[in-house]
Length: 429
Image 1 (cartoon, rainbow, N blue to C red):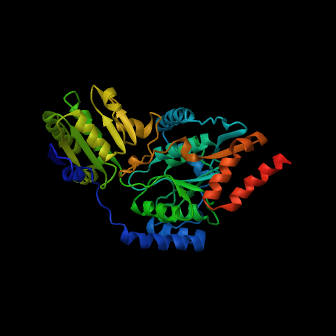
Image 2: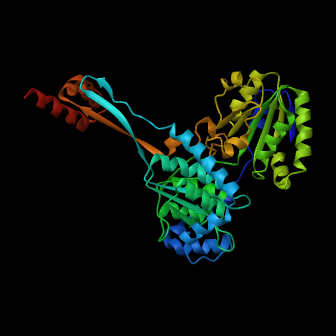
Image 3: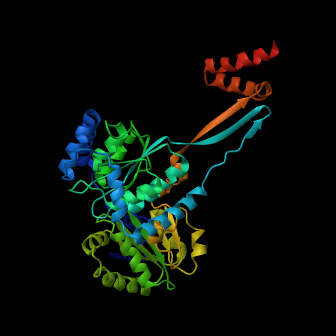
């Protein structure tokens, strides 16, 4: 990790908050070609790319009932119990986010209100790869079910035997997924965005993935299907001082670094001795990690920053807008009030990022790459639309009718004015 002492605002800060650059210009053409093929040739194209990229020949894309039943026998009772507890906590937290619209009388005779309506069909993408993310199934499917989405479709890549990780299937059953398909990568995004003979078309796609999946999501979002949010590699920022526990801080940095070689971790501290102790702990703990090589490459993108005081630490963190922010200090409550930009915040010495990743109840699908400046993480609202309603009585026409006429006339929209004028006249007859 690069160590920076007392950086000055401006160029030095900009370097600290910069993310690893990904040149997607070359892969965009490849992604576009795969999407076009899936749009035109449906299941045939999906199976072709499954053979090409996942090295598996599939007779059918859909996961069968027999495979779902088999997964029940392959998941240990301990893991099943953990999944059920996590699901219960995630459900409890997201249930609390239900929207209750209120009818508002803006003028006499003019009533306006909103109703929250679930998106009917949603698609969830769950990566396989080096770490099959069954936890993400719970994070995405649980609020979709609570919101009332009529169809919840899940795509995930199979292994070379054509099997889906049983923990993914178990999590899908627990969380209420409607249908599961064996498809990964760009072809899965295309299948959900356009629909195939097997995979139904959905209206919004959720879920993480590699740079090809992210590029595919962004391409289909231009014309065909909404997506949860733009995303880049995962990241964490830890703020520490002399009260922090260096072994905890190091563990939090490494838990994020092991996600992938393009992940990024940042330590911001007011204590030089803490910085040095965390550095030693990171080096020691790294040696014991099975995913040591992945974490080590992520640390090459990462920084430890020594700043003057907590005011500067929080200002730098807000400029960075981290996906995950850990306030690993005794005075976390005071610091929490200064948080402006972050995806999810972890308070105190015991709130490790892992808790939110799995079982505390908050959602772990969060804005990365600085998108926390403007985006929220996945929540119950992500699966709903707010439809507005309004009702005008004759009294309402009297209240706002003339204002509408004047505004329409001054925008040179005579048909708009006429729609109101006719109603005003009808009340005088």
